[in-house]
Image (cartoon, rainbow, N blue to C red; front, side, top):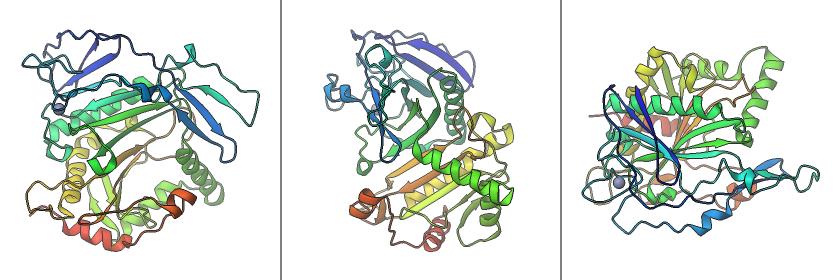
Length: 368
Ligand SMILES: [Zn+2]
């Protein structure tokens, strides 16, 4: 992997990731962009003990690209986008309207003295990862070397963002599909570098620490061994990775992909694990796209999904195992699962697809 760093017209950082050295990435951002004032604050919910990010500046977005002008396509044919180069392989840049912004401390004062109203600047960072220059592609369309390059970019960003002084956890994810709320069709994901440990991660760590205290063993190692030994919910097995539908899946179709060797984050994967990841992940994504027929029978079908990397925070949380959680909100052709009263009101999930049946369908959705 070869990386070239540059700066956009308003000062944001951008990184090109190329498979081979020697690709010249010296295009200059010609747009007349003013530095965006990004201020973000995090507030602690005193009842639940969870941080909520308040990014009110995102409401004042002024930069709306005209319809048909994708900001993630390369800059070519006289049209200037967020990526100055006329072509690219994988590119990562700072979000122009971030939920978490590194300069927030310049605008937001911390309030740590009142336990009912704890507020701090949202000194994190949000980045956009473009998986390919082709506007109409999808991650599932990438070839294995390109998917490997994306993995290397996620890994590099995890290392760099973790080194920022205020960052506690780095989260790489992809939202795919209008049904998930994606407004840009271009194949891309995002990275959030949080100045706190999100509550879901904290809960996983607490559960794993309790498991260690009561059994002397690691929760994730026990879980993976158990799922690998029972074929019911297993979807894919490689030499270095395993994918299964969790026993208590929340979503209609949900798969968790783990390296067979427990590691805390992306930076700890070894070369053999990195080399095998693309084939398994692409296989899973393609199975998701085969779950439901396209409305008019036209190919390719696109199942909306969320793909989320769970990694240990920068400090502590060593019991946590790196893994990817992939799920769709589609439960049947043309039908979505909405988070309504029970899920949104109480965080108590109800699913009407049995995890074992979901695993069977995913196994059957193999390439023809
Ligand atoms: Zn595009």
